[in-house]
Amino acid sequence: MFCKVSSQTTMVKSFHWIETSKIKDTPLPNLKLNIGKCAKIKVVTRQMGYSFDFGNSGKPKEIVRIKDTTWLWVPSGATAITLTNKSLNVKYNYTFGQELEEKEVYVMELNSVRSNFSRVSNIESQWLNVLDKFYIGAEIYCDDVHIGHTPYFGSFPFGIHKLRLEGNEDKKDTTINISKETGRDLILNLRPIADTPSFGPIPQAPEFPGGYEAMTKFISDNIQWTEMMSEYLGTNFLRFEVSETGKISNIKILRGLGYECDKEAIRIVKLMPKWIPGRLRGNAIPTVFNIPVRFHLSS
Image 1: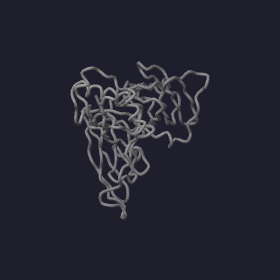
Image 2: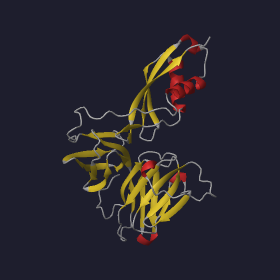
Image 3: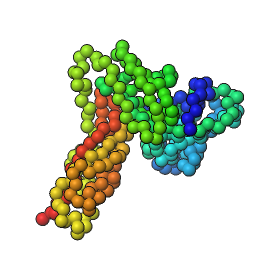
């Protein structure tokens, strides 16, 4: 359940993903520790004394504190965090809206919290991709609080929020109602710069690591033939989403050959490593991509 509270008592100001190349101050973990498959969270707060727990995923594998920033190495797959500050008498449960991915970096900004804020708060959220059509780097405000700029990939608490994008001397306001059924993509049109074509910049397509030839080899090497598949030779066409991190999801058959081949084509795509994500003006963005999977017998 979402409860609207003031910014002085809302602990999490924002939680969002950021490209590793845009983080310049990442410290190194203790190399003697076996941190395994981890995501990293950069927690920004001026208040000290917080402890962190990730439920079934456990405690952070490593914690490094530098001034008003705390770096956490978190087991990938974590979906929520519990922040506790005994000196402030605060306990706060916050969901991320999706699983944290291995080797990715996330930023959690905390608001100042009053010491008399003693009740336990449980905040559910949904992950949302906020883009402006021409990507001009618009500033984003949620309920009049600045949370970042486009492209923005982060979680928004359940409930009704006022969202505002500002950029290029233009401003767009909208109201969003966040729930589990809310779509992940929100694109707002801001006025483009004068020399931008009316149709907008062309995104750079995502790519399998190593390119097209590496992808066809991966498919060929991983096909598991069955006797029934030999009756349905040809080419399957699939569509899937490549997230800003390169993760594949929402795989669909556009044109199939039959149950056995369709099932095998989907299985192979699920086996693929992370792709190189699509880009728009140098920034990683979620994209949709189509590929063929050919089923043929060699001589």
